[in-house]
Picture 1: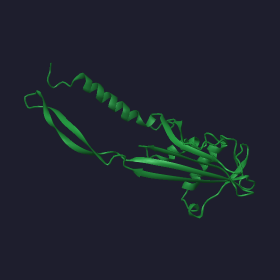
Picture 2 (picture 1 turned 45 degrees about the vertical axis):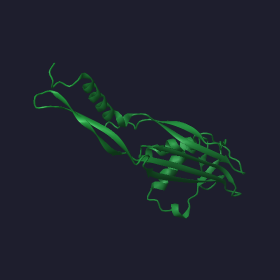
Picture 3 (picture 1 turned 135 degrees about the horizontal axis):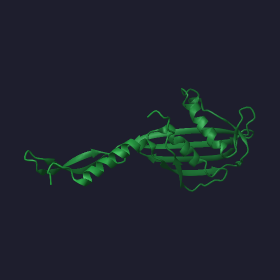
Length: 207
């Protein structure tokens, strides 16, 4: 056996790693969100109209508020709710919070090394302890309030939170919004997990 030849398993591992890197952007993701929802005194109905209400701090958003409302409008439409700013039964307030954090600041990992010596023989270098930083995680939280326009009474409240290694908020929010409104117009005050399949981005043919 040629001592310089890579073991078979090493070659397979390299092929798999390359395939994962190349196909990572095309992987389907399962987005799990922790959801709680509450029914207000006004009650909640399908087949109704609504408009978006913005807090004073939400008036200037450089387009991000419009994008969030467009996502929310699509999800509300799945429950037969129609946006009508002039004749709305409900007002909808939507907010999003994104927090980056470290799951475990540091943890030890032992590394060894296999290398080929000058004589062509595989050798092993003694392992050493290295402190490795965990990659950051992100917590995305969506909070939605729906009020009766005529009375001002709360009709529906829901919030959903997803934690994971992904920072592509624009892709994640539709799945988290769908989870938050999964039970509408029913309420589920007890925290529960809702999983939404997030398909890979459409191939634009640019590759």
